Length: 278
Ligand code: ADP
Ligand code: MG
Image 1 (cartoon, rainbow, N blue to C red):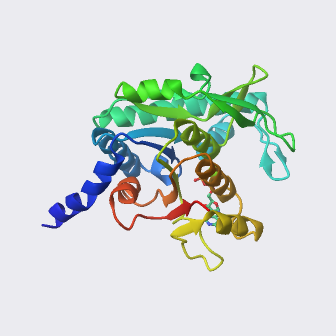
Image 2 (cartoon, rainbow, N blue to C red):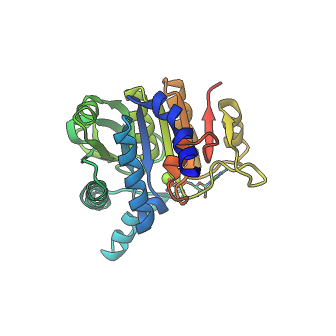
């Protein structure tokens, strides 16, 4: 009976979301721990088979760091920010586009789905300019998303898997923050949901409690008051930007939880933090 209840709870969601696009930022433990990678792939394949169009944008910071260390490539920091020089960018691209991207594609195939891996450079999917402010090398701000290729891939029955690299307006290549890339793509596609997987329970308040629903104006306050810091800032910023750009719902969820994606999409309670409009 329990199984039946679970399926019935999912039914209205399947009905509502069929035909919709969900952009998912994939990274952290969910991308590193073997069991979680398999579960993530099966979640994505299930979404696809119930008529949702999942679009995956992945990160890869820790894997890049490991490769730089292995190759003895020193890292320079400016104000605590990693500088992506030409040599580093080459490794970034190798790891993101060559290694991680294809692993995810393979995992989806192993789970019975079909995926196509591409980087933001393919079809000029993501166009960027050099990030403003401190010079940290080949790190870009997204200026344009040409989403047609994503639609074509999705409409052909494949799951697009995107590495966060971009074509520069200056003809060079840039690395863009994967959360920001996912947000920009969600906006361009008019996605129903933007879901960011990370290694914390969600957005935490000053008492380290997970906030389940966070209004835009309160989110801004949390950033201002320094309650939200570091890597959580681009997540919040891109969720707010996506909401302002027409994405219906944005979520920051705990990728360490088995089947986090299905729990968010198909249960009444959901998990993690939903960032809502106003
Ligand atoms: P990812 O690899 O998922 O992009 P990041 O390390 O870039 O992860 O960003 C998430 C991190 O942001 C968390 O692990 C946490 O250390 C940090 N963080 C800062 N402020 C908060 C907050 N208020 N709530 C949750 N996480 C926060
Ligand atoms: Mg991050």
